[in-house]
Length: 181
Length: 83
Image (cartoon, rainbow over all chains, first blue to last red; front, side, top):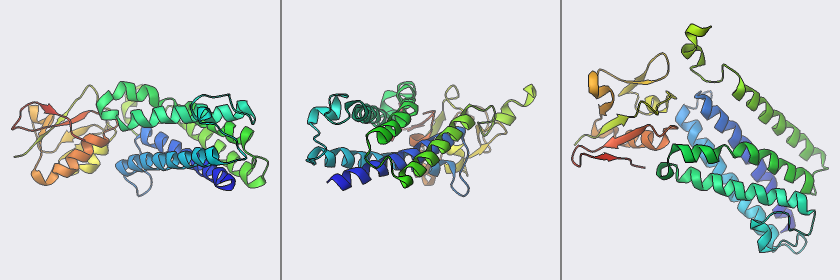
């Protein structure tokens, strides 16, 4: 259970990283190499759902683990844990936010675009919180392979964020801003 | 019966997913927005679709990032958003 809990947590974080990158790409409106736009959008959704499955396995297995000593309340309420409560609490915060994002994303057609979008912005908060939880709480955080992958995904997210904020982010930015330039 | 694909222009941002899924029905203009191929006037907003395009139209409605599309069934008249 302990080994499984660690690996599933790592998988979840890696998949969420990919999902955030694909989400930013979806927002820009560009296709990805041979993948058309709707495929990128579906891939973004499915990888996020897969990451959530691993997140469920991560929490579920550690809930049953005798070493982690998680109580059911720790799944919902942050900062009450016995082992590094602050860093563990960040994981709980991320889990709660992910739950909100997933539910509103699946109900997008019902609740409308504005509510969906407002909650979906939380993903930008979830990623750093989840990464801090992995670095601060994870017992593999000192491992070289973990630090390498954490640095690589951090750089990828930071790069995507800078691209997101740049003026030529939208596929149609040049055409739409044509008269301004 | 053929359903019509309604485009809500106040929501549309021209992301281009619908023009990929319904390549035979919609083309993209220079700014990314969908234009109904060979249609004039109101049919550019309420685009008639053939039954063979029904699946692609439903996918376009559910995948539109801005929720700007809806399918209208001429039999029932009212707007219907299908998943």
